[in-house]
Length: 267
Length: 165
Image (tube, rainbow over all chains, first blue to last red; front, side):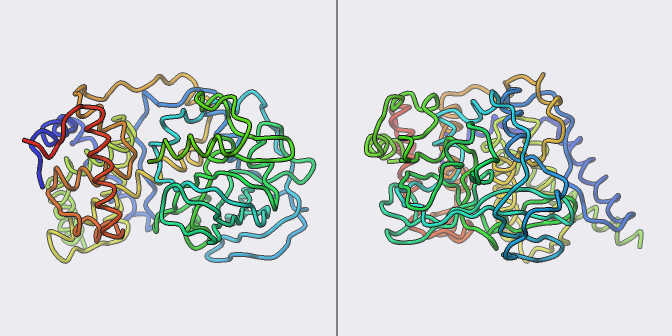
């Protein structure tokens, strides 16, 4: 059912003629280029003059997903996925990544955590966590996969008792790997309870690296996209979450306090 | 060979002219800045070339663009860090102010993305909840629920209902 007021508002969001011409030229230019060179079309980027992220944010992001050269000695375990020059292997150790402890501060604010992504929200118990090496034909990334049993559902199409596989944004701690900044996802250990807000991968979600592609849904259905804001973990060290991002529960001591807050936010 | 290329280009131009405004609005509602929006608009149309897509009907063409643009934007938001090569490129960049100002538009832009898309498809493009559900591959009940929640949020923020005259 069309709505005039909504249409009038959205009509303000229209590219001007110059932008339309510029985009079309880029599209057609890319078309010619790919035909001449017979290669896969590379995604086009407009020259940037603005960006929503601060330097600290970018620093944090770069740190989280740093691509590493192959360190060679990563006690290769089971190959969990292999397709088209992309291989995902379970590893028990990951190389040390240089960190900037002050960088992991403010990627997403409270509003963005709840509004920016298509997330589910549930209380669950960590069943298993494994570190992974993702090999894009020689370019390596390290992540972890958490297997979580759903105990209570706050938002999303999940059922109690279901098991959720969620990619984590970095490896879990194997004793000597990450800095304290990664305390939330690093802390995930089997048996721990938490409230989780992973994003749901869409069916065409692809990680492109080194000219290779990993279709994420062939590997995991969910992902926790930063290390501290989309999980609230009840650990031996106490309740861990990014308190500065959630001022309303800054002083929370129990998962149940977080639960009340989350239920209010997602309703 | 040249004729084929020319025909393909003309087809792309035709599709682009028919839908660029719609694709731009969808991308902007996710990304909220013109620079990223232009990138994703381009990438949406490049996908047609890249995958040699042929459309069965005008409806198929439109629906494909809606879904592709939406998925590319979500992908972009989730994995922006993977695409950032040099941290120095971003240190000097300032917050974006490209967004036009309108109370309803401002409120819509603050909604969760899953609400923004269904609102757009329902109130702007005129699809019903069944058509939206098929397009987004979601249960119809989920779409209806998202629409309900989106309307409720707008009502709370604006003090009026979109469905009222």
